[in-house]
Length: 128
Image (cartoon, rainbow, N blue to C red; front, side, top):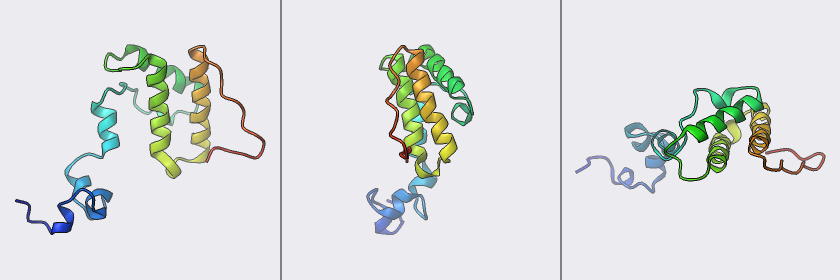
């Protein structure tokens, strides 16, 4: 039996799930890290999302998706999902410049697979 206070025994409490003074983050990996390492995700090159060239990011994702034997969806969907997953998980911590590069990488990826590019955003609107 766990000897920690009752409030920390339940996954639904803020202390246990936030990683701040809780046990969940210290005992195990965060779920997003586990997704990257052990799910039917792609085997990515190190630092692929930190690159400054959208075409290089897209090409690396395409190669990873086509090489992977663990993916369940078609290569394009797997690659696009991994890119979107990274952008969404980074959230507000992702610098605007890098977010723009990653959004451009989505269009590069679409182009590599012969898919149409997304529609341009109206003037004055930017990605969050």
